Image (tube, rainbow, N blue to C red; front, top):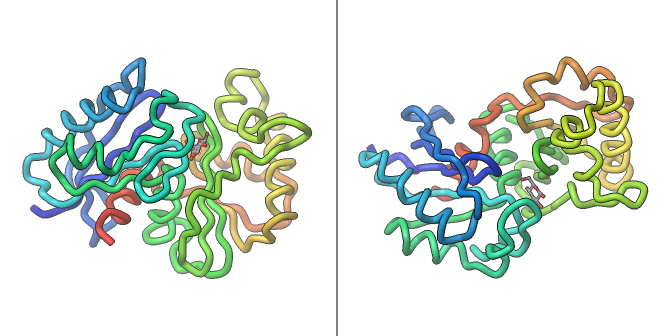
Length: 245
Ligand code: BGC
């Protein structure tokens, strides 16, 4: 079985699965290990090595998502992870630690690529913007099927606040917002994206997208907006796609 492995580095868990690229789905059940309290590059690399060991039959390359800016394998931001990642050549570190060919990619970019290839944005042209609503807000810009990486649209400013500090799903939980209150925040956010980018489609990912019927109908925006369909498999699948290209 030469399937690539996708690994998703999240705030609470690090998850991995071999991916069957012909089907766009996991080739075996996903494995998860909690994210170390101090999510330093070394600690996280150790967890990823343990996860890869659980799939001895998946011998392909490994794709890894990082919740930060990644350029040429080097991590350049770390809003919600240990700051030790900044400046780390994660491709080199993980290739060395895992003894495999490893490519790292921004987590939202990975989800965007997966939704484009197998999910909610399949067959769509023009400008698709995927936003992931979770601990922070991640974004993927996809134009005519091509990813423009590291768009970081969760860090735009709304009324003097970083957007992800106003409209991430975690903010709804922390501030105990109702669906209506949360939808109002999202309306402000997506209207700004409309003004700046005039997209053809928004795709909404992140855990909260499973409750899309609660808040998407409350949004007052012009652009078509749909929930992601690959849900929490998108980042792992997208990382495996990108590492195999
Ligand atoms: C990071 C992004 C990431 C997003 C979702 C943001 O804080 O800056 O790179 O995609 O969180 O994890």
